Length: 127
Image (cartoon, rainbow, N blue to C red; front, side):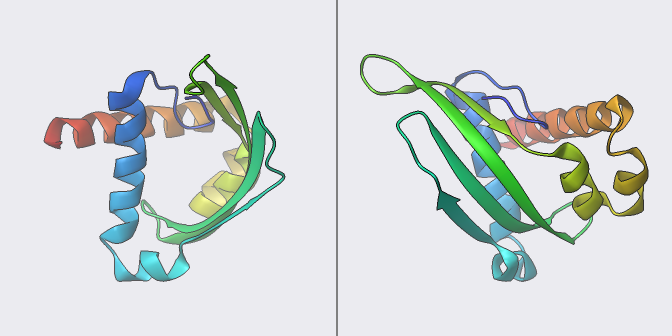
């Protein structure tokens, strides 16, 4: 799995990421009220989805518009999943002014990736 925040391998990391994100939403009533997923343009190798949620680190409302690409093995299992989204658009919503000013920069992208990796490592240590 690869997107703007994570580069993950194997069921422990990938499943852990989804569990961590879902647990963050389930743990706060205000997050549940904002969470919504809309899916469209589904093909045999891609899909578009819009994720509506509160970003847990800031409590800010986000609508993340994502294009997903998939590769499958002979048994129909996903071997590669790549999500692409506009990081600057996401960072403006999720982070506010810092995202607006620095969301285009590799500095902020790398900082978000490092924080996401640290959060997942901490979460997996508890799991």
